[in-house]
Image (cartoon, rainbow over the protein chains, first blue to last red):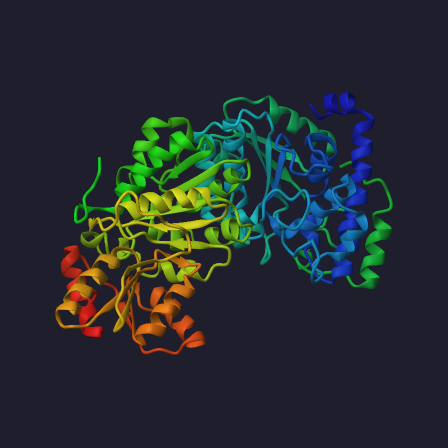
Length: 285
Length: 309
């Protein structure tokens, strides 16, 4: 399937892969400048969020409040560097502003603030909230007769929250086919692996049992990502969840799969080494 | 149907009636409910406007944040549940997803204070006002009767920003008329007297009025204020009264810590130090029982107010 999509999108996939590398460099640059932040979960989500902002979402950066825009909610709000990078590179605010991440008086809060940052549609950061917010948006857009769609990115760790499953029930009840959830399944939480902290498998079975259309993809395979979003849009009468297998810290060899990089900033030497690794266009898995 | 002064009606009934009326007047109004619509009286709105009613099940946390999401798409969500669940089960959701972004969500709750008297402590919200009052951006209201509720629900929907509205499960007497005017943040000066200020909220306003009558028989003239908006507090009205009487008694169906008593103590302490007595639950949970008997047992009825005055 990915091959078909690859043929269909051709050069688009190469463009998005290069864009994702730019986003990864931005992530490290802003966290390095802030001297705090969450690189691991930002890098694992970078390919998917790049695909959304540079291919999938209907947006107008000059009019961030355009009522018919597609909505994105980063429920795992600690990964906001990936969101800020995509918004800046897409033109919602100057790329140079990324250097003000977490700065006093700045617009780029430590976790996303919809009242401060252009393009941020929902305040997040307290885990387990974003899917509920996305459900409200999807209900509201459908009731208003708007064709806009809602995308919510979840972390695997926040699936421990009971509210996620309250939300899962209600999205299925209301047959929200304008809602797509994406699980950034990097299998690392703050204190360890998902299995160590709180096992969530069999994950696809859980979502199917809750009435969702389930797609399982490699979250770093750009062709597979685009295909999955196409399939989600084609599905009617049910919400879709993309369970995207990813690698925490993806793209920086010494960060990949290391829970230590969940929430710490690179020092000058680490930053230089990371940027050197991200000069390529990003390998295809 | 016009209700007469003295008629006994739960204020949740007034909420249900006003919601039905607003449904026709405000096309952006939507209602979210957590499986207690027959009790909260949103069932009437649900029957009349089914497309704008969302039954979210027994899942208040999800409901609260779904309302936040709905509000960002141009709708005015009214979230309906009991006070205990909105203020505590979904407390962080109210604080972080509704109040922090200042979203236009109305949190309308029945079963305020000990008014779900027979239900007992699990359903009696006696700490909610204190919790909600500390949250920035939040407006906190408890109307005293049927007509105050009708007017303040309408005002809350017209107001832009988050509002917490607290109603009674059990019946309270009508004290206002349909013509009385209410403005958020502006208390009502119900009786004038120079000896003591009775500063009351919600279902305790009628107890304060009854206490004022008892005091009058003893030659004590009470000033009676209905502070239906706990936040923002009507500082000027309270300070003017306290300056006249130099003795204030607060009266609330809530713990004396955190709610109206605390708010008035803070105000007087900073602006006009005045002797103060607080009527309410004194660091205790109540229990099951008839509403009037609970008020008596826990020192919250008119005679207890008189004793404090």
